[in-house]
Amino acid sequence: AWARVKRRLRAELGEDVFASWFARLELEAVSGGTARLTVPTRFLKSWIESHYLDRVLGTFKAEVEEIARIEVGVRGSGAPVRTVATGAPKAGPASGPLARLHAAGTPVPVAAVAPELRPATEAGGDLSGTPLDARLTFASFVIGRSNALAHAAAERVAAHQGEGALYNPLYLHAGVGLGKTHLLHGIGHAAREAGRRVIYLTADRFMYGFVNALKTQSALAYKERLRGIDLLILDDVQFIQGKSIQAEFGHTINALIDAGRQVVVASDRPPTELEALDERVRSRLGGGLVVEITSLDEALRVSILSARLAAVRASHPGFDVSPQVASYVARAITANGRDLEGAVNRLLAHATLTGTAVTMETAEAAIRDLVKNREPKRIKIEDIQKLVASRYNVSRSDILSERRTAAVVKPRQIAMYLSKVLTLRSLPEIGRRFGGRDHTTVLHAVRKIEKQIGEDSVLGDEVELLKRMLQD
Ligand code: ADP
Ligand code: MG
Image 1 (cartoon, rainbow, N blue to C red):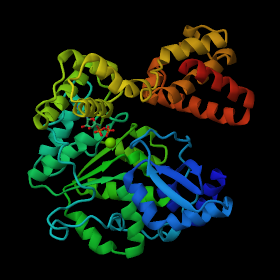
Image 2 (tube, rainbow, N blue to C red; image 1 turned 180 degrees about the vertical axis):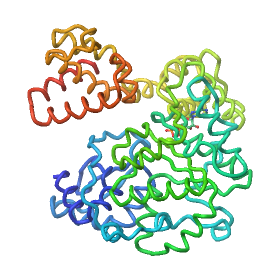
Image 3 (tube, helix red, strand yellow; image 1 turned 180 degrees about the horizontal axis):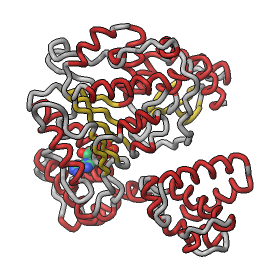
Image 4 (cartoon, helix red, strand yellow; image 1 turned 60 degrees about the vertical axis):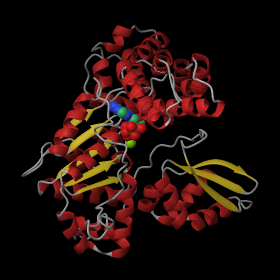
Protein backbone atom coordinates (compact mmCIF):
# COMPACT_ATOMS: atom_id res chain seq x y z
CA ALA A 1 0.00 0.00 0.00
CA TRP A 2 2.84 2.39 0.81
CA ALA A 3 4.22 2.03 -2.70
CA ARG A 4 0.79 2.96 -4.02
CA VAL A 5 0.56 5.98 -1.73
CA LYS A 6 3.88 7.21 -3.06
CA ARG A 7 2.82 6.57 -6.63
CA ARG A 8 -0.36 8.58 -6.08
CA LEU A 9 1.56 11.45 -4.52
CA ARG A 10 3.91 11.49 -7.46
CA ALA A 11 1.02 11.52 -9.92
CA GLU A 12 -0.89 14.20 -8.01
CA LEU A 13 1.97 16.54 -7.21
CA GLY A 14 4.10 16.19 -10.28
CA GLU A 15 7.62 14.91 -10.66
CA ASP A 16 9.52 17.97 -9.42
CA VAL A 17 7.58 18.47 -6.24
CA PHE A 18 7.64 14.77 -5.56
CA ALA A 19 11.38 14.44 -6.16
CA SER A 20 12.10 17.44 -3.95
CA TRP A 21 10.04 16.57 -0.92
CA PHE A 22 8.75 13.04 -1.07
CA ALA A 23 11.40 10.89 -2.73
CA ARG A 24 13.06 10.25 0.64
CA LEU A 25 9.85 9.89 2.63
CA GLU A 26 9.59 6.41 4.12
CA LEU A 27 6.95 4.55 6.06
CA GLU A 28 8.27 3.44 9.42
CA ALA A 29 5.21 1.97 11.11
CA VAL A 30 1.43 1.93 11.18
CA SER A 31 -0.30 1.49 14.50
CA GLY A 32 -3.67 2.43 15.92
CA GLY A 33 -4.66 4.54 12.95
CA THR A 34 -1.40 6.49 12.93
CA ALA A 35 1.07 6.16 10.10
CA ARG A 36 4.55 7.14 11.15
CA LEU A 37 6.67 8.44 8.29
CA THR A 38 10.30 9.45 8.32
CA VAL A 39 12.56 11.77 6.35
CA PRO A 40 16.32 12.28 6.63
CA THR A 41 16.38 15.92 7.73
CA ARG A 42 14.58 18.17 10.16
CA PHE A 43 14.09 20.69 7.44
CA LEU A 44 12.20 18.22 5.25
CA LYS A 45 10.08 17.25 8.23
CA SER A 46 8.97 20.79 8.96
CA TRP A 47 8.40 21.57 5.31
CA ILE A 48 6.22 18.51 4.77
CA GLU A 49 4.36 19.17 8.01
CA SER A 50 3.60 22.75 7.17
CA HIS A 51 2.75 22.28 3.51
CA TYR A 52 1.71 18.77 2.73
CA LEU A 53 0.42 17.02 5.82
CA ASP A 54 -3.25 17.12 4.80
CA ARG A 55 -2.41 16.03 1.32
CA VAL A 56 -0.38 13.06 2.53
CA LEU A 57 -3.11 12.09 4.97
CA GLY A 58 -5.77 12.29 2.28
CA THR A 59 -3.73 10.21 -0.11
CA PHE A 60 -2.96 7.66 2.57
CA LYS A 61 -6.61 7.41 3.57
CA ALA A 62 -7.59 6.76 -0.01
CA GLU A 63 -5.41 3.64 0.09
CA VAL A 64 -5.81 2.58 3.71
CA GLU A 65 -9.07 3.73 5.19
CA GLU A 66 -8.15 3.24 8.85
CA ILE A 67 -5.40 5.83 8.79
CA ALA A 68 -6.51 8.85 10.79
CA ARG A 69 -3.24 10.55 11.61
CA ILE A 70 0.16 11.13 10.05
CA GLU A 71 3.31 11.64 12.06
CA VAL A 72 6.59 12.69 10.52
CA GLY A 73 9.89 11.88 12.21
CA VAL A 74 13.54 12.41 11.36
CA ARG A 75 15.56 9.32 10.62
CA GLY A 76 18.74 8.83 12.57
CA SER A 77 17.67 11.06 15.45
CA GLY A 78 16.95 9.28 18.70
CA ALA A 79 16.14 5.62 18.38
CA PRO A 80 17.46 4.05 15.21
CA VAL A 81 14.80 3.75 12.59
CA ARG A 82 14.70 0.94 10.14
CA THR A 83 14.56 2.46 6.72
CA VAL A 84 13.22 0.84 3.64
CA ALA A 85 15.75 1.33 0.92
CA THR A 86 14.47 2.84 -2.27
CA GLY A 87 16.59 4.01 -5.14
CA ALA A 88 16.40 7.69 -5.90
CA PRO A 89 13.64 8.08 -8.45
CA LYS A 90 14.65 9.02 -11.92
CA ALA A 91 13.36 12.44 -12.73
CA GLY A 92 10.58 12.10 -15.24
CA PRO A 93 9.54 14.72 -17.74
CA ALA A 94 9.79 18.07 -16.06
CA SER A 95 6.56 19.85 -15.30
CA GLY A 96 5.49 23.11 -13.72
CA PRO A 97 5.78 26.68 -14.83
CA LEU A 98 9.54 26.75 -14.92
CA ALA A 99 9.80 23.68 -17.05
CA ARG A 100 7.30 25.18 -19.44
CA LEU A 101 9.40 28.31 -19.69
CA HIS A 102 12.38 26.16 -20.49
CA ALA A 103 10.45 24.27 -23.07
CA ALA A 104 9.46 27.56 -24.66
CA GLY A 105 13.10 28.50 -24.91
CA THR A 106 12.87 31.35 -22.42
CA PRO A 107 15.90 31.47 -20.19
CA VAL A 108 14.94 31.45 -16.54
CA PRO A 109 16.87 33.93 -14.43
CA VAL A 110 19.35 32.51 -11.99
CA ALA A 111 17.58 34.68 -9.55
CA ALA A 112 14.49 32.52 -9.49
CA VAL A 113 16.28 30.01 -7.40
CA ALA A 114 16.62 30.83 -3.74
CA PRO A 115 14.59 33.81 -2.57
CA GLU A 116 15.66 33.42 1.04
CA LEU A 117 19.05 34.79 0.05
CA ARG A 118 18.63 38.23 1.62
CA PRO A 119 21.23 40.93 1.87
CA ALA A 120 22.60 41.45 5.36
CA THR A 121 20.60 44.58 5.93
CA GLU A 122 17.29 42.91 5.25
CA ALA A 123 17.78 39.87 7.43
CA GLY A 124 18.80 41.65 10.60
CA GLY A 125 22.49 41.73 9.78
CA ASP A 126 22.86 38.09 8.89
CA LEU A 127 23.11 37.19 5.26
CA SER A 128 21.97 33.67 5.64
CA GLY A 129 20.58 30.69 3.90
CA THR A 130 20.97 28.03 6.55
CA PRO A 131 22.59 29.42 9.72
CA LEU A 132 26.15 28.43 10.55
CA ASP A 133 26.83 26.32 13.63
CA ALA A 134 29.11 28.28 15.96
CA ARG A 135 30.93 25.14 17.05
CA LEU A 136 31.97 24.09 13.56
CA THR A 137 35.02 26.27 13.00
CA PHE A 138 38.51 25.73 11.61
CA ALA A 139 39.78 26.03 15.18
CA SER A 140 37.78 23.01 16.31
CA PHE A 141 38.63 20.96 13.24
CA VAL A 142 41.30 18.34 13.87
CA ILE A 143 43.69 17.77 10.99
CA GLY A 144 44.97 14.34 10.06
CA ARG A 145 46.17 12.43 7.08
CA SER A 146 42.71 11.78 5.65
CA ASN A 147 41.51 15.37 5.67
CA ALA A 148 44.68 17.50 5.46
CA LEU A 149 44.24 18.34 1.80
CA ALA A 150 40.56 19.17 2.16
CA HIS A 151 41.33 21.33 5.17
CA ALA A 152 44.16 23.18 3.41
CA ALA A 153 42.00 23.88 0.38
CA ALA A 154 39.14 25.04 2.62
CA GLU A 155 41.41 27.45 4.50
CA ARG A 156 42.86 28.91 1.35
CA VAL A 157 39.45 29.45 -0.19
CA ALA A 158 38.20 31.08 3.00
CA ALA A 159 41.24 33.36 3.28
CA HIS A 160 41.35 34.34 -0.36
CA GLN A 161 41.07 38.06 -0.96
CA GLY A 162 40.96 40.06 -4.11
CA GLU A 163 39.89 39.41 -7.63
CA GLY A 164 38.45 36.17 -8.89
CA ALA A 165 38.18 32.85 -7.13
CA LEU A 166 40.80 30.26 -6.30
CA TYR A 167 39.66 26.77 -7.07
CA ASN A 168 36.24 27.15 -8.53
CA PRO A 169 34.30 25.30 -7.45
CA LEU A 170 35.99 23.64 -4.51
CA TYR A 171 34.29 20.25 -4.32
CA LEU A 172 34.66 18.15 -1.16
CA HIS A 173 33.38 14.62 -0.98
CA ALA A 174 33.38 11.91 1.67
CA GLY A 175 31.18 9.38 3.41
CA VAL A 176 28.90 10.40 6.24
CA GLY A 177 30.37 11.93 9.39
CA LEU A 178 33.84 12.59 8.00
CA GLY A 179 33.76 16.35 8.48
CA LYS A 180 32.41 17.86 5.24
CA THR A 181 29.77 19.99 6.91
CA HIS A 182 32.26 20.98 9.61
CA LEU A 183 34.72 22.25 6.99
CA LEU A 184 32.00 24.08 5.05
CA HIS A 185 30.88 25.90 8.18
CA GLY A 186 34.53 26.63 8.93
CA ILE A 187 34.88 28.26 5.53
CA GLY A 188 31.69 30.21 6.13
CA HIS A 189 32.81 31.55 9.52
CA ALA A 190 36.30 32.49 8.36
CA ALA A 191 35.12 34.20 5.20
CA ARG A 192 32.49 36.18 7.08
CA GLU A 193 35.03 37.29 9.63
CA ALA A 194 37.11 38.53 6.73
CA GLY A 195 34.14 40.65 5.72
CA ARG A 196 33.01 38.59 2.77
CA ARG A 197 29.36 38.00 2.02
CA VAL A 198 28.68 34.31 2.42
CA ILE A 199 25.68 32.09 1.94
CA TYR A 200 25.55 28.52 3.17
CA LEU A 201 22.72 26.37 1.85
CA THR A 202 21.87 22.72 2.16
CA ALA A 203 20.40 21.01 -0.87
CA ASP A 204 17.04 21.01 0.88
CA ARG A 205 17.18 24.75 1.44
CA PHE A 206 18.18 25.25 -2.11
CA MET A 207 15.20 23.30 -3.39
CA TYR A 208 12.91 25.10 -0.97
CA GLY A 209 14.10 28.41 -2.33
CA PHE A 210 13.54 27.25 -5.82
CA VAL A 211 10.00 26.09 -5.25
CA ASN A 212 9.23 29.31 -3.41
CA ALA A 213 10.63 31.42 -6.23
CA LEU A 214 8.06 29.89 -8.52
CA LYS A 215 5.34 31.30 -6.34
CA THR A 216 6.77 34.70 -5.51
CA GLN A 217 8.25 35.60 -8.87
CA SER A 218 10.88 37.76 -7.21
CA ALA A 219 13.35 37.00 -9.92
CA LEU A 220 14.82 40.41 -10.64
CA ALA A 221 15.32 41.58 -7.10
CA TYR A 222 16.82 38.25 -6.38
CA LYS A 223 19.31 38.52 -9.19
CA GLU A 224 20.51 41.79 -7.71
CA ARG A 225 21.05 40.13 -4.38
CA LEU A 226 22.90 37.21 -5.83
CA ARG A 227 25.35 39.59 -7.48
CA GLY A 228 26.32 40.84 -4.08
CA ILE A 229 27.45 37.47 -2.79
CA ASP A 230 31.15 36.60 -2.63
CA LEU A 231 30.90 32.98 -1.64
CA LEU A 232 28.19 30.38 -2.08
CA ILE A 233 28.48 27.17 -0.04
CA LEU A 234 26.23 24.24 -0.91
CA ASP A 235 26.06 21.15 1.28
CA ASP A 236 24.89 17.65 0.33
CA VAL A 237 24.35 18.39 -3.36
CA GLN A 238 23.67 14.70 -3.98
CA PHE A 239 20.14 15.38 -2.75
CA ILE A 240 19.34 17.82 -5.52
CA GLN A 241 16.76 16.16 -7.68
CA GLY A 242 14.14 16.97 -10.25
CA LYS A 243 14.73 18.08 -13.81
CA SER A 244 13.98 21.77 -13.59
CA ILE A 245 15.52 22.12 -10.15
CA GLN A 246 18.80 20.65 -11.27
CA ALA A 247 18.76 22.88 -14.34
CA GLU A 248 18.38 25.94 -12.10
CA PHE A 249 21.12 24.62 -9.90
CA GLY A 250 23.36 24.44 -12.97
CA HIS A 251 22.45 28.00 -13.98
CA THR A 252 23.24 29.32 -10.53
CA ILE A 253 26.63 27.64 -10.35
CA ASN A 254 27.54 28.79 -13.85
CA ALA A 255 26.49 32.37 -13.26
CA LEU A 256 28.48 32.64 -10.04
CA ILE A 257 31.61 30.99 -11.38
CA ASP A 258 31.51 33.05 -14.56
CA ALA A 259 31.25 36.19 -12.44
CA GLY A 260 34.35 35.16 -10.50
CA ARG A 261 32.48 34.34 -7.30
CA GLN A 262 33.69 31.45 -5.21
CA VAL A 263 31.53 28.32 -5.03
CA VAL A 264 32.15 25.53 -2.52
CA VAL A 265 30.24 22.27 -2.66
CA ALA A 266 30.11 19.10 -0.58
CA SER A 267 28.67 15.73 -1.43
CA ASP A 268 28.82 12.10 -0.41
CA ARG A 269 30.22 11.14 -3.80
CA PRO A 270 32.50 12.49 -6.53
CA PRO A 271 30.94 14.71 -9.22
CA THR A 272 31.07 11.95 -11.82
CA GLU A 273 28.67 9.91 -9.70
CA LEU A 274 25.98 12.55 -9.21
CA GLU A 275 23.62 10.53 -11.33
CA ALA A 276 20.62 12.80 -10.76
CA LEU A 277 22.48 15.70 -12.35
CA ASP A 278 22.97 16.54 -15.97
CA GLU A 279 26.35 15.77 -17.53
CA ARG A 280 27.19 19.46 -18.06
CA VAL A 281 26.44 20.33 -14.45
CA ARG A 282 28.54 17.38 -13.29
CA SER A 283 31.49 18.42 -15.36
CA ARG A 284 31.22 22.02 -14.17
CA LEU A 285 31.20 20.79 -10.59
CA GLY A 286 34.26 18.68 -11.28
CA GLY A 287 36.03 21.48 -13.12
CA GLY A 288 37.63 23.14 -10.11
CA LEU A 289 39.41 21.32 -7.32
CA VAL A 290 37.90 17.99 -6.22
CA VAL A 291 39.13 16.65 -2.87
CA GLU A 292 38.11 13.49 -1.08
CA ILE A 293 38.20 13.06 2.69
CA THR A 294 38.95 9.40 3.32
CA SER A 295 37.99 7.43 6.41
CA LEU A 296 39.52 8.56 9.69
CA ASP A 297 42.66 6.67 10.66
CA GLU A 298 43.19 5.74 14.28
CA ALA A 299 45.53 8.62 15.06
CA LEU A 300 42.96 11.09 13.80
CA ARG A 301 40.17 9.40 15.72
CA VAL A 302 42.23 9.66 18.90
CA SER A 303 42.83 13.38 18.26
CA ILE A 304 39.20 14.14 17.49
CA LEU A 305 38.14 12.23 20.57
CA SER A 306 40.58 14.01 22.89
CA ALA A 307 39.57 17.38 21.48
CA ARG A 308 35.93 16.53 22.10
CA LEU A 309 36.66 15.26 25.61
CA ALA A 310 38.62 18.41 26.42
CA ALA A 311 35.75 20.58 25.19
CA VAL A 312 33.25 18.69 27.34
CA ARG A 313 35.52 18.74 30.36
CA ALA A 314 35.65 22.53 30.18
CA SER A 315 31.96 22.66 31.08
CA HIS A 316 31.87 19.49 33.24
CA PRO A 317 34.94 19.73 35.46
CA GLY A 318 34.26 16.43 37.25
CA PHE A 319 34.16 14.46 34.03
CA ASP A 320 37.31 12.47 33.58
CA VAL A 321 38.18 9.79 31.09
CA SER A 322 41.43 7.88 31.37
CA PRO A 323 43.77 7.60 28.37
CA GLN A 324 43.05 3.85 28.33
CA VAL A 325 39.33 4.38 27.97
CA ALA A 326 39.87 7.08 25.34
CA SER A 327 42.07 4.82 23.33
CA TYR A 328 39.59 1.96 23.64
CA VAL A 329 36.80 4.19 22.33
CA ALA A 330 38.92 5.49 19.45
CA ARG A 331 39.78 1.96 18.48
CA ALA A 332 36.24 0.60 18.82
CA ILE A 333 34.47 3.36 16.94
CA THR A 334 35.91 3.43 13.48
CA ALA A 335 33.00 4.64 11.44
CA ASN A 336 33.03 8.43 11.65
CA GLY A 337 33.24 11.65 13.61
CA ARG A 338 29.55 11.67 14.40
CA ASP A 339 29.74 8.36 16.23
CA LEU A 340 32.81 9.53 18.14
CA GLU A 341 30.80 12.50 19.28
CA GLY A 342 27.90 10.23 20.19
CA ALA A 343 30.29 8.12 22.26
CA VAL A 344 31.50 11.14 24.24
CA ASN A 345 27.90 12.13 24.95
CA ARG A 346 27.13 8.67 26.21
CA LEU A 347 30.16 8.56 28.48
CA LEU A 348 29.15 11.93 29.84
CA ALA A 349 25.54 10.88 30.37
CA HIS A 350 26.71 7.76 32.12
CA ALA A 351 29.09 9.62 34.39
CA THR A 352 26.55 12.31 35.28
CA LEU A 353 23.65 9.94 35.85
CA THR A 354 25.48 7.40 37.95
CA GLY A 355 27.86 9.84 39.58
CA THR A 356 30.67 7.38 39.05
CA ALA A 357 33.91 7.63 37.11
CA VAL A 358 34.05 6.12 33.66
CA THR A 359 35.79 2.77 33.77
CA MET A 360 36.71 0.50 30.94
CA GLU A 361 33.67 -1.61 31.72
CA THR A 362 31.14 1.18 31.91
CA ALA A 363 32.58 2.68 28.73
CA GLU A 364 32.15 -0.60 26.95
CA ALA A 365 28.52 -0.83 28.02
CA ALA A 366 27.83 2.81 27.18
CA ILE A 367 29.04 2.61 23.61
CA ARG A 368 28.08 -0.99 22.86
CA ASP A 369 25.27 -0.12 20.51
CA LEU A 370 27.44 2.31 18.60
CA VAL A 371 30.01 -0.38 18.06
CA LYS A 372 27.65 -3.21 17.23
CA ASN A 373 24.64 -1.79 15.50
CA ARG A 374 25.72 1.41 13.94
CA GLU A 375 28.80 0.13 12.29
CA PRO A 376 28.08 -2.08 9.33
CA LYS A 377 30.63 -4.74 8.67
CA ARG A 378 33.41 -3.36 6.59
CA ILE A 379 33.55 -5.43 3.44
CA LYS A 380 36.78 -5.52 1.48
CA ILE A 381 36.85 -5.49 -2.31
CA GLU A 382 39.42 -8.26 -2.14
CA ASP A 383 36.99 -10.49 -0.21
CA ILE A 384 34.29 -9.82 -2.75
CA GLN A 385 36.63 -10.82 -5.57
CA LYS A 386 37.68 -14.00 -3.79
CA LEU A 387 34.16 -15.09 -2.98
CA VAL A 388 32.75 -14.37 -6.43
CA ALA A 389 35.70 -16.10 -8.07
CA SER A 390 35.20 -19.24 -6.02
CA ARG A 391 31.42 -19.31 -6.68
CA TYR A 392 32.05 -19.14 -10.43
CA ASN A 393 35.04 -21.44 -10.53
CA VAL A 394 37.49 -18.90 -11.81
CA SER A 395 40.52 -17.47 -10.05
CA ARG A 396 40.81 -14.00 -8.56
CA SER A 397 43.55 -13.21 -11.06
CA ASP A 398 41.13 -14.10 -13.89
CA ILE A 399 38.81 -11.45 -12.50
CA LEU A 400 41.59 -8.86 -12.43
CA SER A 401 42.90 -9.89 -15.85
CA GLU A 402 42.12 -8.54 -19.30
CA ARG A 403 40.41 -11.76 -20.38
CA ARG A 404 37.06 -11.18 -22.07
CA THR A 405 35.54 -14.66 -22.20
CA ALA A 406 31.99 -14.90 -20.91
CA ALA A 407 33.07 -17.24 -18.11
CA VAL A 408 35.22 -14.45 -16.67
CA VAL A 409 33.32 -11.33 -17.70
CA LYS A 410 30.16 -12.18 -15.82
CA PRO A 411 31.74 -12.88 -12.41
CA ARG A 412 33.92 -9.80 -12.90
CA GLN A 413 30.85 -7.63 -13.45
CA ILE A 414 29.05 -9.16 -10.50
CA ALA A 415 32.08 -8.49 -8.31
CA MET A 416 32.20 -4.87 -9.48
CA TYR A 417 28.51 -4.48 -8.79
CA LEU A 418 28.88 -5.92 -5.29
CA SER A 419 31.86 -3.66 -4.64
CA LYS A 420 29.74 -0.66 -5.52
CA VAL A 421 26.77 -1.60 -3.37
CA LEU A 422 28.61 -3.08 -0.38
CA THR A 423 31.56 -0.74 0.07
CA LEU A 424 31.87 3.02 0.22
CA ARG A 425 34.49 3.01 -2.52
CA SER A 426 34.06 5.33 -5.47
CA LEU A 427 33.84 4.03 -9.03
CA PRO A 428 37.41 5.11 -9.94
CA GLU A 429 38.72 3.42 -6.80
CA ILE A 430 36.86 0.22 -7.65
CA GLY A 431 38.26 0.40 -11.17
CA ARG A 432 41.78 0.63 -9.77
CA ARG A 433 41.18 -2.42 -7.60
CA PHE A 434 39.99 -4.38 -10.60
CA GLY A 435 43.28 -4.39 -12.43
CA GLY A 436 43.36 -0.68 -13.21
CA ARG A 437 40.12 -0.37 -15.12
CA ASP A 438 38.43 2.90 -15.97
CA HIS A 439 35.50 4.10 -13.84
CA THR A 440 33.22 4.02 -16.88
CA THR A 441 33.86 0.28 -17.17
CA VAL A 442 32.78 -0.13 -13.56
CA LEU A 443 29.71 2.02 -14.10
CA HIS A 444 28.80 -0.04 -17.14
CA ALA A 445 29.12 -3.27 -15.15
CA VAL A 446 27.05 -1.90 -12.27
CA ARG A 447 24.25 -0.79 -14.58
CA LYS A 448 24.31 -4.03 -16.51
CA ILE A 449 24.04 -6.23 -13.43
CA GLU A 450 21.34 -3.98 -11.97
CA LYS A 451 19.35 -4.44 -15.14
CA GLN A 452 19.91 -8.19 -15.31
CA ILE A 453 18.89 -8.65 -11.70
CA GLY A 454 15.62 -6.96 -12.52
CA GLU A 455 14.98 -9.29 -15.43
CA ASP A 456 16.39 -12.56 -14.20
CA SER A 457 15.24 -13.69 -10.78
CA VAL A 458 17.70 -16.57 -10.63
CA LEU A 459 20.57 -14.15 -11.01
CA GLY A 460 18.83 -11.85 -8.53
CA ASP A 461 18.76 -14.61 -5.91
CA GLU A 462 22.32 -15.55 -6.64
CA VAL A 463 23.54 -11.99 -6.11
CA GLU A 464 21.43 -11.66 -2.97
CA LEU A 465 23.03 -14.81 -1.63
CA LEU A 466 26.51 -13.50 -2.35
CA LYS A 467 25.60 -10.31 -0.53
CA ARG A 468 24.47 -12.19 2.57
CA MET A 469 27.58 -14.35 2.55
CA LEU A 470 29.71 -11.23 2.49
CA GLN A 471 27.71 -9.43 5.15
CA ASP A 472 27.65 -12.26 7.70
P1 ADP B 1 29.67 15.11 7.23
O1 ADP B 1 29.09 16.43 6.86
O2 ADP B 1 30.85 14.73 6.40
O3 ADP B 1 28.65 14.01 7.30
P2 ADP B 1 30.18 16.39 9.76
O4 ADP B 1 30.96 17.56 9.32
O5 ADP B 1 28.75 16.64 10.11
O6 ADP B 1 30.27 15.22 8.70
O7 ADP B 1 30.94 15.70 10.99
C1 ADP B 1 30.28 14.85 11.92
C2 ADP B 1 30.75 15.17 13.33
O8 ADP B 1 32.11 14.79 13.46
C3 ADP B 1 30.67 16.64 13.61
O9 ADP B 1 30.30 16.81 14.96
C4 ADP B 1 32.07 17.13 13.39
O10 ADP B 1 32.36 18.26 14.18
C5 ADP B 1 32.90 15.92 13.79
N1 ADP B 1 34.15 15.86 13.02
C6 ADP B 1 34.36 15.23 11.85
N2 ADP B 1 35.63 15.38 11.44
C7 ADP B 1 36.22 16.14 12.37
C8 ADP B 1 37.54 16.66 12.52
N3 ADP B 1 38.50 16.43 11.63
N4 ADP B 1 37.79 17.41 13.63
C9 ADP B 1 36.84 17.64 14.56
N5 ADP B 1 35.58 17.18 14.47
C10 ADP B 1 35.27 16.44 13.39
MG1 MG C 1 27.15 16.91 6.30
